[in-house]
Image (cartoon, rainbow, N blue to C red):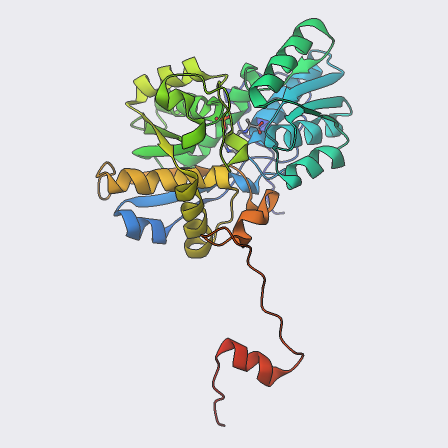
Length: 360
Ligand code: F0G
């Protein structure tokens, strides 16, 4: 019988704080493909791999942390979970809570989350409230609610989330046979940056790898508090998933950067969208704009001469392109692409495609 991947809690039970008393709330998350990216290797001279986290059950890396956070919440008797979100966390919280048979309440910034993610939270029966504020405002309310009302917080300030997410680093080490030289992730709250760093640290301590990769993290230029060293009151970027001005795991990320000789950089929306297009058109991987910042970061660092030739680089692309597909239909000047309409006739279609008939 074919072996089915059992989700990160079962696959990595020995490296997570779970016991027989922990109900395993899983949708089969993790075990995502690590895909070689020849087009990016050719552009940079490095050996580039893409960890495609859009292949998780709700289409983002958040599922790794949510299986852990909701399982532990249920173990502790929670009947409801709450989170603030730019969209993906709310989709994951809603899905895992519905699977567990408990309630999820999610707070999102009004009008600022992608349609696919909004639809997911509602499809999975969450109580979704749009707050007249940004993500940082939502998180403050969520923390307040969790402190004073019977709801369990499942944002990444909850360490169970980081613990679940560290499993992605274990998978990379297993596939490559060692840690990469450099690992690049997008940064919003900096939870995932922290989680990979922890996962690689544990792999090294176990003797599964011989080194800790340098951790590179990228924020969008209009939303880059860690890069600039100060809170951004009104963060702006088309990469709505990482539109965050006061990251919850800021301090942890600074420690992780120290530990790994890492790097934080900022990328313009224009470069994010260029990288988004390169990844979909040249590598065949469709992601949401926030995820493409890993690619943009790689290209920016390579142009700066900071990616050694022949080094192994892993890019995490965090969320699926189908969550926020509108950007694929935009041209560089911002107009929307409308596919050509053709008469129901082979010769007409061949003409439009520029095909010349072959004689037989
Ligand atoms: N990429 C995507 C697609 C995300 O949704 C997020 C965060 C990140 C990257 C950044 O990860 O916060 O761990 O640094 N999304 C959160 C959410 C904030 O609510 O879905 P991080």
